[in-house]
Length: 277
Ligand SMILES: O=C(O)CCC(=O)C(=O)O
Ligand SMILES: [Fe+2]
Image 1 (cartoon, rainbow, N blue to C red):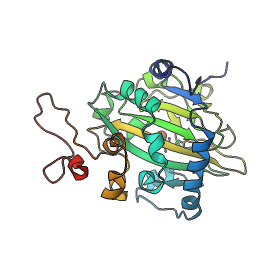
Image 2 (cartoon, protein in one colour; image 1 turned 60 degrees about the vertical axis):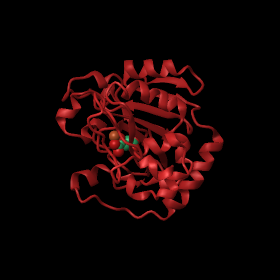
Image 3 (cartoon, rainbow, N blue to C red; image 1 turned 90 degrees about the vertical axis):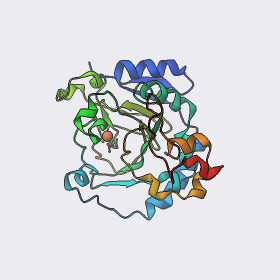
Image 4 (cartoon, rainbow, N blue to C red; image 1 turned 30 degrees about the horizontal axis):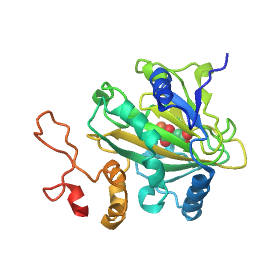
């Protein structure tokens, strides 16, 4: 029996999404974003993709991991206004509350990445996104949750994300049999959610055409985010955003200590929110 990824619809009860995430560690939700949002967002990213120049972190194995036939863009909160609609989508945030609040008092954006896989890209190595942080922290549970938004159709041939349902509960080092790996095939406008402990990878593309995704990952508010998106944003840009977006972008203090003994992320000895008062 081929492995199937749990599949829901965008207007479903959010409780079903939470259940699927707890049980499987990955779920596809179809008809999640409207055609209107999809067209608008694709319109906002197209000129950025057209002008894209590959850059490197300087860490060779990581640059390899990012792919040679894949266009990646960051700084999306600053560059693409409609990113914010997805970032604070109430259904996504309800799932993030469920998945991440056991570990923290609030979560922040870890990375917002546009990932466009092109013909002849080879699959990434299988990994978990928890791997971004040191091993002792990984024992705490899922440090992040990824919402992979399909901006085009995702197919087995064009590089759909490879996922392993149930792998979020595996012990570290347990590798999947080939039959347990399945492409998260989904039409444009869907979202695939997976935990920081779910094994996955960008897929192989054998076809002429693109697989374009928007990966929005949220992490515990006390972690250093994967992307340094703070450097992209101006104060004026953040000021114009809804408060919840400001908070998720890290422009607030994190108070997670039992007795208010310390806060993280304070600014000029105060709260970044004071910038907008
Ligand atoms: O592009 C994809 O489908 C997955 C990318 C990914 O997992 C990553 O870059 O960490
Ligand atoms: Fe990943």
